[in-house]
Length: 489
Ligand code: NDP
Ligand code: HEM
Image (cartoon, rainbow, N blue to C red; front, side, top):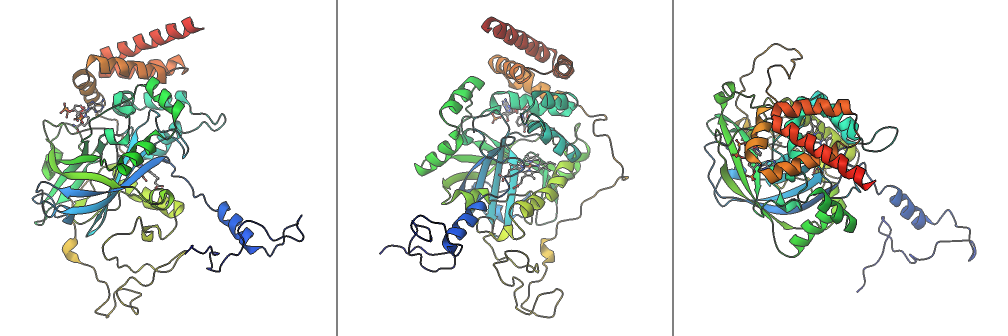
């Protein structure tokens, strides 16, 4: 039996090939509702793209606990070794628009929504453990430098380096971006990091600070700029092809989820601010503790419904997991749900991809596109408190332990007394080998092409404070690039 085509109202459509016209040559009659419905729907097929991280690739999967961490957290997702939780992951680039080529040098987003039995927990991270800015006031300015110039409508290297060279806290992240890790071959061949410091609390109400690391089990693999350009020449959709293809072939990628855990009071003693998003916690001080395995094993059935409409937010947390004083994180707790209400609509969390897989009870009411009824546990309970026993009530047993904070309200200079160089130095001097350093210098030299000398010199001044060899390497790479370009003319 064939499936009968209908209007959105469910009425059968007799002819989907020929419009309703006055005579065979037209004109079209206004009463051709089916044509009008088709055109009207097409006009509404696009929603605003994400203001950042617009281009993305996603899949469903499973998280399995492999190690007991219940001494740190009461989060139900970690309750038992062997426990499985369904999840959705979305990877992305940051700066490019929805149609951007996948293999561009950029930070990659690494967002995971865990559908836990006590609500959705989202880790909305990147493939880098740190970030370009540490004060959320500067996030919109930073993003403007990554997007298009208002007049030329072109991306501007001058704007990027002007901002970075005036923001020394950015150069640790710039070092990672310009290193091999700035251009992973596929989303499967990179790590993910929660980046911020979050918190855990256990059943006794003890708090710990925590960082999340997703370590790729496929191994790291990267392209050089030239290799990336060659791939883009063949396909602009290399990541989608790789992720979708590998899952379709039954070859399921995996990541090991690890945590670094810091006792609550240690935060007052570390030589760096552990809530500063431009800093890592050295592994030697806070070693990685394995928690479980994330496997991606199911492609979405419909990209738009399940990936474009996916709404990840750091505000989605569950009992046992909390925020930290990190200023950036605080701003993100506001920003994402606000973006989702604008991009997707008031009831975005009731969309199937975002809907929790546990009972949902709240007293929010009505609003555009409300397609669900009362969620309060009883038809007469549309306010709270009420005296209806069956209605949804708060559960004090899930309360987060109180957080010790103090301080005078002021706009504190976040650069004062802050060491922006040592951790970038550790990466440049100790973690990278000679070949990696040479590629780093070459990538920076290319990225600096065409910018005013004054801005380049200001940036080089900061690179020299990371390590004199770093600045010298970039200078040599710039000279070689300049000579190469002259020879080619
Ligand atoms: P470790 O030697 O214990 O760890 C070095 C880390 O660097 C590893 O996690 C490694 O990831 C990662 N790494 C290697 N190459 C790059 C690259 N090009 N870009 C980004 N990360 C890379 O050192 P420490 O913990 O003492 O940290 C030293 C420096 O390493 C830090 O200042 C920071 O710049 C960088 N780093 C540190 C991380 C941390 O959480 N401690 C995380 C990532 C980077 P992998 O193990 O997957 O190969
Ligand atoms: C997406 C804001 C910092 C990772 C977004 C979106 C906004 C936003 C508005 C689009 C959301 C949507 O429409 O669905 C901010 C602000 C930041 C900040 C205000 C700082 C103050 C960060 C940091 C990280 C990060 C530090 C990583 C550690 C991501 C990711 C996405 C995203 C991965 C895409 C999520 C997805 O796949 O849908 N950000 N961001 N952002 N951001 Fe941020």
